[in-house]
Amino acid sequence: MPASGAVTVLDYIAIAVFFLLIVYFGYLFKQVSGNTRGFFLAGRSLPGWLAGISFISGNVSAMEILGLTGGAYVYGMVFAQYDWIGAIPAIVALSLVFVPFYYRNRIYNLPEFIGRRYGEATRAAHSVLMLSYMLLALGTGLYVFALALNVMLNWPIWMSAVAAAVVLGIITASGGLPASVLVQFVAFSFIWLTLLPIPFLALREVGWWSGLERSLAPEMMTVWRDASDPMMPWPAVLIGLGIALAGASWATDQAIMQNILASRSLEDARKAPLFGGMVKLVVPLITVIPGMTAAVLLPGLERPDTSIFHLILRYYPAGLAGLGFLSIMGAFSAMNVGMITGISNIFTRNIYRRHFARDADERHYLLISRMTSVVALAAGVLTALIAAQFQTVYIWMQEYNIFVIVPVFGVLLLGLFWARTTAGGAFVGLATGVVGSVIAFFVMDGEHLLWRAAATLALVLGVTAAASLFTAPTAKRELEGLLWGTLEGQTSAGLAWWRRAEALAVALLVVMTILLFVFA
Image (cartoon, rainbow, N blue to C red):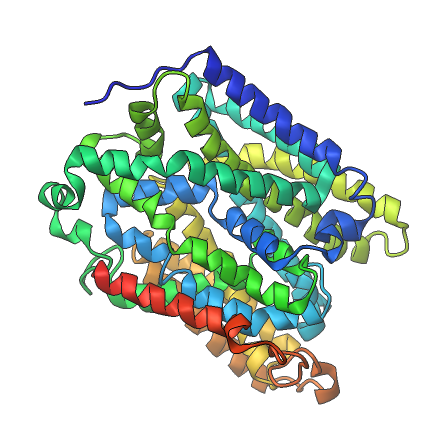
């Protein structure tokens, strides 16, 4: 067995340099983000490949790395479905269906689009729901960062969370989205450079794939669990994860959506999530595989979420362990700088600007945006304690997705494809979905997560449709650009077939299908 890597002064230096570097990024982009358009959308100047990297880097966060690794430690290969069935079809739908609406409407955030389709009341309700979700996600991210420092440096959780909040507050309050994109790009490179050796070193120690098969139960080795499985039965994976949770997460997440909205053209915006999908296909290599090997090499961990940290210390020699931990810290920073910018964006434009100061100048709104970033981080430190109550942080966030994101997705989906959907119907459906999902959680004692996601989506669609029939329809002229079939420029006309977003989308679906058969 390899000796565990010891933490040395070189590791401390590496962490200190990392903190100083991301603070510098905030200072570097302070002038670029001199107005709200630059602060929130980087002046809409990102090429598709960079928007795609920042898009997926904001998703492949420390919460995802720790959550999937911890989930695979407990449940096995089936957690790869969060990156395959739970991502690729939804990413394709985002690119081909949702992005043209978002981009053509020149919105800053999704509540703006919801407001144009359903009116001020639903926009305000959506804004509040998204802010609550993003604050809890931010707190979970801070907790993940605190776990890293706790395992490596033995710092108390509260001290680690506060240190992370201070650094992130400096970069986001100063540099906004441009600084966030740079952090995400650097984090993306760090993640793959430092974590890629881990699965191969761990697989070699357990005897490669055949060694895993001998050491783990058969149900740990497949992406398709039996229909009676209490956690991830295959029908629930297809419906609850593939449609409800995945559709909701990818089509409505402001923290990653803002990178697409910052693209320099519609075609770049459509391709950005597909470029991210190419990365998503191989994410299980650095998350699920290490988690499964850790279940063999490190049985009985009190916190499965920390298994990746223990593998880093197991395989990286003294002086290099800090680099491994930096990959987790970089992933944490990538997610949370986007999350903080998104919170600031939604609060400033949908709450403060519309209800408290409609006619202020750009400098005033920029100041409010930066102040919001600081307040959000303070609240995030407090909500970090909630994440500690769940065995894996990934499951905790999926629960809140059901409470908030799935209902939003339901009214968004129906409004795009059915002209008869009304503002009143959407508000009633959204409220019913939130309340119903919370009640279902307590009634079922937190069990059957994926089935509850599917049921929540069905409830929202049904209630919204029924309530819409009892309210006055929206005039057709008011739905131009907000309803399927009314938006111009939805295709890649003029491009060779192999350069179109549709071709890349088909390729992603084909590769995903092959992987699902290989690991069946």
